[in-house]
Length: 64
Image (cartoon, rainbow, N blue to C red; front, side, top):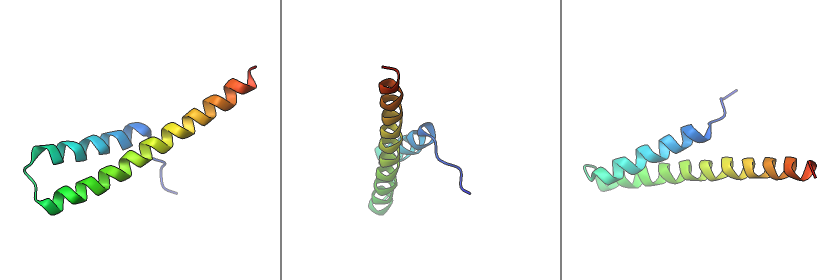
């Protein structure tokens, strides 16, 4: 079973791709690939944050 990626890991990946694109020392094809991979990392970050928000809302509503 694959280990579930943490928010910090996904964010680090996103930052890595952003830095690579900012360096401007890459080809257009590499930049496109970094953009695509960065977009996936961004989506993972959003999903993890949304899941955390739902858990907090659930427990917060439970305490009322």
